[in-house]
Structures are given as structure tokens and as C-alpha cells.
Length: 243
Length: 395
Image 1 (cartoon, rainbow over the protein chains, first blue to last red):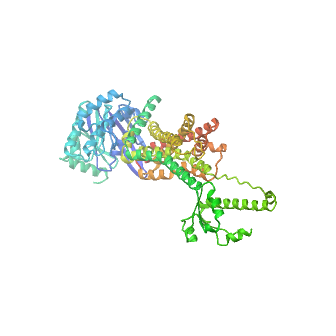
Image 2 (cartoon, chains in turn yellow, brown):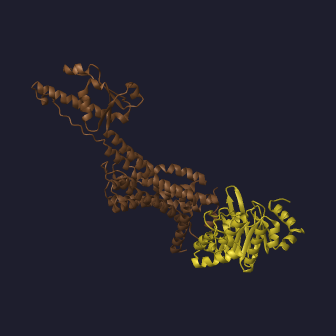
């Protein structure tokens, strides 16, 4: 479970995140929806401890993630925006590296790696170096290394960006599976359809503020629009101060 | 998070960086090159020196008009290592074009003057601007003076005068700039080559694991792991240090093989890198490697891109070369303060060990103390940089 209260972050004159607050529950997929530059990535970066918020509180499973980032990070699996791989290491070695950093024993890592290869259908590329992997294959490796320690909370920053249909489906099925296992899944996207198809709860962010949150039906009711896309556009405009 | 856990993470990062870098052929190539370049250059210079000395041993004296002074020419030809040949027709041209180092001309009136006990003219043609032939000209001049002296003595004896009477001075020349000394100068480059090899060998990991990691976008996922930044930075630093140390070890072992391959004995040079000396070299090399790797990781972390980091490395590599070049130009000596200067201390100590000495414990501790303190400060600075969002995201 992830709880965020009144999170703020400024870069010089620009306020990137301006009082964001939401709750992402266990056993649910929470979508962080917003146009590019709305503050989604900055919010996530503060959640997973590579940026310090100027103000606000973050709790990961009741742990204060601002005061104690490392215990919180131990409970997070993260697919960051623009993840990078090591071209000279194999897919398996990526998983081993991150598993070891999480303090797992090598036997446990080996077992978990096999599960992940199965789950992500990547047995064929398991022992190949990642140089020359397709975008879909790279995403799978990054997902596998993020999930090596079976984290209770999973943060995915635009995981399906640039993926083909097959890989997108694979990612979505993983996300659902994680939710069904009772985990808390928080993922960001700027794609309306994806969020509405996948999410149990939606947090709409625009210009660094939460402009609406609730289930897809809630959002339609709030805005009085029939289609979620119209609702999204309306909400985004409101966030920007439009009418 | 316990200290033990952080140490384990440090080792994990270090192992990964080493494995990653040893799969990088270009990185390996640069390590091999940096290790080989020193011993190869030294071997090349040594062989040239031996050749030059061999050339100097057989003195080629082209003589024009040998028929005018058969006794002189015969005397010359009988001297050790002197080879008298017919001189060229165009004497000055030949010397100017460096076809001949020198030419001895015996004029037609030599015999007449000689018979009359007058100074008999001889012309020694050489190019005074050529440093390389100066010893040869010197030797020929000395030979001619020796001949002149012998004839003078004979003439005095014939006239009943002791030759000693006309020698108020007995000058003995003692030449110190021998080939042996030049060989010692060449071996004086060994400390510099050891240090440069260490520096270059650590460079790849230092840049690739910091500036390279960020540029690949793999830094952000790495920092999401529950590991203290200090452990991650120290792991990268240790990996670069170990690679640097590998460079030092390999260069030292290669240099220890040089007496077997090079004719050092013939040059009268003693280079005896036995096991204790090698141990001392490595003892001096380790703090040096830890320091230079810390400097490299800090500078590479500050760089805005991998390319920029690499170009900084190109400048940094001058640091381990400065003491070596200075040492070749002016004798540095070994003042106490030198040991406390990170790049200079190891150089002075290494020079002592290569020269067959045993390093002073106090000097060794002073060197290790300052190098390790400086390294600790730099690793701390890099850790702070790794906490900065500007550095992580390259803003």
C-alpha cells in the first residue's frame, strides 16, 4: 500500500509537483494518468527514493519513505522511466545483480529467475547479452529485475510506452497477475484507453496537481461526460486553469 | 541497514563492475596496451643504445690521401676497433649529407713537413652541429693526439730529452656520461610506466560505471535498490582500483622479466627485481591505485557526459606522468615532503626500489597515509554527488 500526502517538488522556478496526494491500495491497480509534463514521473521518483520531496509525506506499507528510503525501497519493485540495461550482461545476470543487492541468496535468486522467465516468456533470451535486444525484450528484462525480490508494491512508469501489441498485452497480464496476488500496483500512463482498460482506480494529474481520483465510473460521473476520454480532456483543462 | 549488509552490497557492485568491464574488449585492449607500452619502449630504447655502443666500438675512419702518410694510417688501422677505409671524393659534401660522420684528409705536403719535423698538416672534417657523431670525432681526435704524442716522445728521446719534461700536466679524462648512465636513465622511466599503466587500467571502469552508467540510463534503476549510496560508490571505486592494481602488477612482472630479455648485463646495468622488490613495488602501488581510481571516479561523476568524462581522463593521465618527466629532466632527490604528495610520493618510492633500495617505513606510511586519506575524501565527495539529483539525472 502506498499513501502520498501533499507532495511538493520544485525545480528552480518550476513547480513540478504541487500538493499531490492519493492512496494506492493493495490488491488494486492504480493508474496515474496525466499528459506529458504533468508531474507523474517526478511523483514516482520521489516515491522510489531517487528524488527528495520539498514537502509532503510518503508511506510505503506504513513505512515513512522520506525519512527511511531504503527500508521503503526494499518493499518496492520499480520500472523507472527510461530504464537502462547493461549491454554486456545477460538477462539472467541483470536479475542476479538486483537480487543480490536486495540481499537475496543465490539459490533463491536462481529459483526466482526461473519463475520470472516463465512468467514473462523470456526463456529464449535468458542467457543472451542484452546488447541488441528489442524494446519488448528490454522491457521484460527490466521488469524481471524489478520483480526479483517479489515486492509488495510495484511502480511502473509508462511501462507500455513504445511497445508493440504483443508486448503490451504481456505487460498488462503481468500487471493483472500482480494485482490478483494482492500486491499494490501503481502505474503511470498518458494513454486514456490503457488506464481505463486496466485500472481499478485512477488518479488524474495535471500541472502537478491531482485534479480527480476515483474509479473510471466515478470520473465519468464527476465530469458529466459519457466517454472517459472527454472526461480526461475536461479534467486536464481544469488542472491547467482552463474553463 | 547494517554495516555488514552495506559491505556485502559494496562487494556485489564491485564484482558486477569488474565482470562487466572484463567483457568490454576495447577496455581490455586499452589495459593490455597500457601494460605493454612501457616495457616495449624501454626494450626498444635499450636495444638502440646497445646498437649505438656497438657502432661506437668499431670506429670507421675514412681517410683521403692515405698514401701521403702510410705510417700514420697503418698505426690507426692497428688500433683496437678502428677500421680505416678510403675516403669519399667529395669530402665536405659527404659529411654535410651525413654519409660520413667524419673524414680525415692527409694533404700532399704531409710527408715533407713530417720528415722535416715541422707540424704536419691534417684535416679532420666533421659537422659540429651533429650531437650523435661528437663522441666519434672525439675518439679520432684523441687517437691522433696520441699518435702525435708518441712521435713527439720518440723525437725527444732521439735528441736526448726526457718526454716527461715537455708534459707539465698529466691530464686524465674521466667520462661520466657513459652508455651505462644513459641505460640507467632509461630504466628511470620504469616507475612512471608502472604508474601510468595503473592509471590507464582503472580509467575504463571509473568512467563507464559513473558517467557511462548515467548515460545508459541504468543509474536510476540501480539507485532504486535498497543500498546506501556510499556502498554503491565505494563498490565502483574498488572495482576501478582493482583494475588499476592489475595494471600495476602486470607491468611490474613484465619489467622484472627485462633482465632476461635485454642485454642489461652487457651495459653494466643491474636491474634485479626479485620477489621482495616486487612485493615492495606492489605495496607502493596499492595506495596509488586506490587514490587514482578515486580521483577518476569523482571527475567522471562530475562530467556531464561519457565523452566529457573521457576527455577529462585524457588530461588527468598527465598527473602520473609529471613526476616521471620531471625526474628525467632534473634529479628529484627525495625530500621528506615529497612522500606526502599523492602522485609524487609513489614515484619517489618506486624509483628507490627500482634502484635496488628498500623503502623507508616512515616514507611508505606517509605516502600511504596521504594517498588513502585523499582517496577517502574523494569517495566521500562522489557519494555526495550520487545523492544530488542534478548528478543522477544529469541536469
